[in-house]
Length: 164
Image (cartoon, rainbow, N blue to C red; front, top):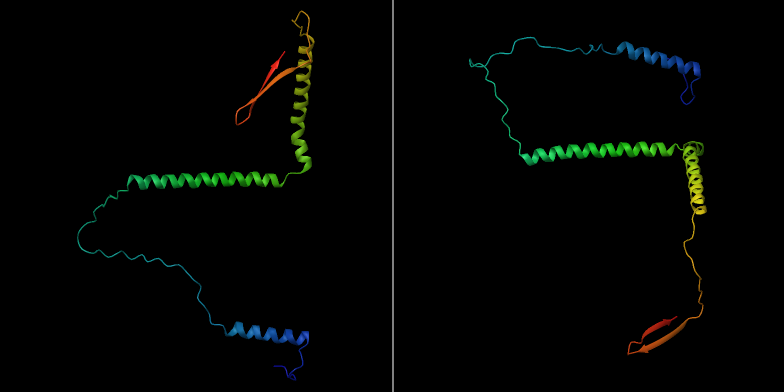
């Protein structure tokens, strides 16, 4: 035991000495606890009565509607779990998208789109060059329009007749 004046803190060496002593005392005075073991009783079960055991078949009946509900709930649960896993995978994948990844994925599709557009434009121009007009005769272009307006009745129905 250290003789110390109350209120003055211990030094590092004194504190280590006191803690080591307290630990030694606690370990020496601790009661010995037996280790936990498993136990199996091998004595035979006593027979009650002289009647031999009789098989008892399971004769519980479950209504058809209860079986249907049980099967449907298992199916719905599995389906919802699958949908949830799929959504998680999609969202996990979307959260890790970078611009370089998007460009790497989109580049082949953009190339195919450019080629398809070029082929479509070439086909369109080839068709436009081979069209011949089948119209023959003079073309008359009229720019004057004469109309007749008749407004009649209480609700003022207007009717315009265009004469050419």
